[in-house]
Length: 144
Image (tube, rainbow, N blue to C red; front, side, top):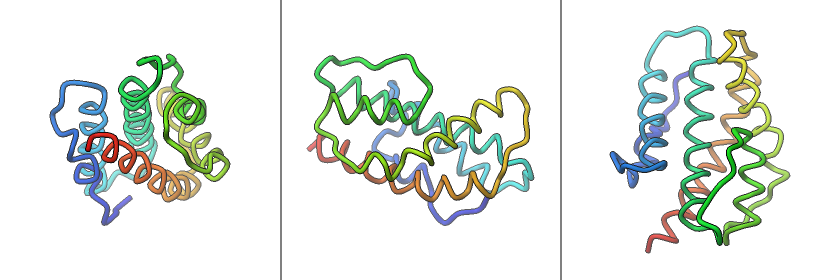
């Protein structure tokens, strides 16, 4: 699944930080390695992509929510709902809902060793990348 987007560069502000965002950066680094490999089954890529987003969501919730905490869910759409409800982050949730559902399901299927629809997954990544940029923008704005 080659891409010109280097995820580790997008998440560079979190490089080797010892918190959830640092773990998100580690998954971003893994994605970049996977993007240069010849792995046919994209489910491992999906697992790391879902983990990168999940950990970034949870970092933002822990850091910027009214409560300083996050739920234990792995469902990306629920984490987005939580982020919008409990922080100043605003976005068009409907735009991302289906892609986040696909990412969550395919990561679950990786855990159970099922093959996934790589074409559908890749379409969800395109949409997920847009949200990723919004999340990074929110984190960057909040840091300044």
